[in-house]
Length: 261
Image (cartoon, rainbow, N blue to C red; front, side, top):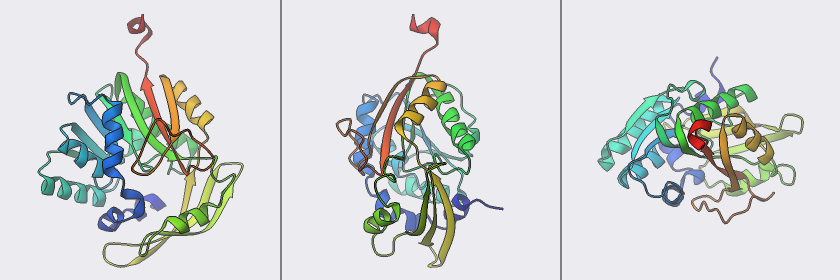
């Protein structure tokens, strides 16, 4: 049986690109460039690349990017967009829970909940983080966004999503936030690229900063910085608060102890 995140992204590529939460690509890539020091020699891994919006934009700016995603439908659209932009990008179908890379990239990105934290168990989400860190060279950076567990403690997720949605956008209802698991269960309604409506029972994990820090330290990351994630305007100046629906995480993989000396 397919999981909701597999069904969601079938025949949903063009509509996905029109959703409100995908409109900040250029500004987000500005932040990525700052974080990597505009080093065009870096190889970048885009995990959960979807329709390739960050991969295409970064490639147009001169970076070498490999994009991976579970959805072949999303990857088809990503390849189409790359051809239209004249960008040579290696898009591959991989499950983020079992990435095949080891110490190959100077930077890995995982934005707009690209896999993490959509999995049905905490162990599966951890495997995604583990694979992302393993893919990095020592000293490499991981930049990702995830759902901020501080937000639902003070706000209604259902109300927030309803206010953010535009006409024809995905909608969410019957949200219930479980304080024991920090999971939001909801019914997500979308219209696919053929105009068909889909209703999916979804389950997403929210994380608090201390959890993210502990998980990344367990995986060998040294410096771990967490900020509020503003759509299209990521910044180190945005201290994470209870008003932020997402958090932005920037972590650096530690070199082996012998190298650190």
